[in-house]
Length: 395
Ligand code: SF4
Ligand code: SF4
Image (cartoon, rainbow, N blue to C red; front, side, top):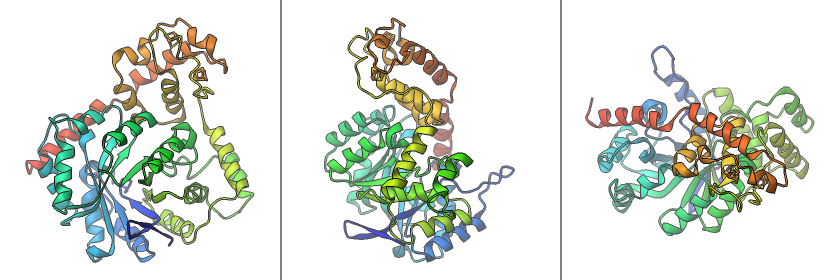
């Protein structure tokens, strides 16, 4: 196992993400035997970082993780959990919720604790006096129940920069979705640079974009087999991240023993990509992208009578088309109504200015359709909020 130094801690570069354990569809129960077997293999091979969150798997991830880790001394691994401010529909007893997580994880403290999923919609909750989340989380840190504080982030680079500027000195690390496809598709490069510029550690989630990069189409996979017949597609996604110096943690949501074995092989030694391999991955990323070729030049923005952030909306459109759902929909939720795609009046000023010849009004119409018909975060919050409050009441 290869390791990283983070403030004197020796962190395995591969972390175990606990959001994808297999659940029996009939009973809704997690296959604990399988979780135990995967953890045994990971732990004995040097993985020392385990990441969960209150809402994962309807609240059952924390319990399954704690059960699997109960076989090992607490001080021999690092535990990460998250405060679900994005999953509650009104103020709640934050301290009770935090303590519930400690109880479910069978621990007295979290080595790493994150504000979960900051984005354009949830940021107001995390910063609001009424919800009082940040102040309470900082109190837990003062009491020694949190060793290192960070946040996971799904918004755009502008929000990331603003948020970090507003809270300079509070956080030590930021967890972002980053992989060779989102490097450009979701501006992960910009986010990586912003976090690095603030002197914080970068944590990675979705290294294989929810499995999309783990097993490629046969034609795309063949391009990688040229380098090594036996290496998995997933190994290239991980090695791309290994080559980025400020990445301190790469989380993989593993759910099969074979997947753990393959990942452990990739992290046995430091194997950053050659230039040729990296170029091939970027070519694969381009082949995977759907949507329109917006370069983000912003020439279209000046003439827009509705002052829409057209490149940002097109980024959302391209992400929808490439298969990302809820996190993109949440970014649009966070916009005022007069800045949503539905506010486009179809005047066409933008298309005249666009060097790429993009039919922006048509994109806005389709984006609005995808957004309106897609799943809504507000519905997920209702369900999650109910589960959380019932659990706190001891139901
Ligand atoms: S067509 Fe829509 S996006 Fe383009 S300039 Fe007009 S209002 Fe703005
Ligand atoms: S002018 Fe065209 S390429 Fe440039 S940001 Fe606008 S839509 Fe994108």
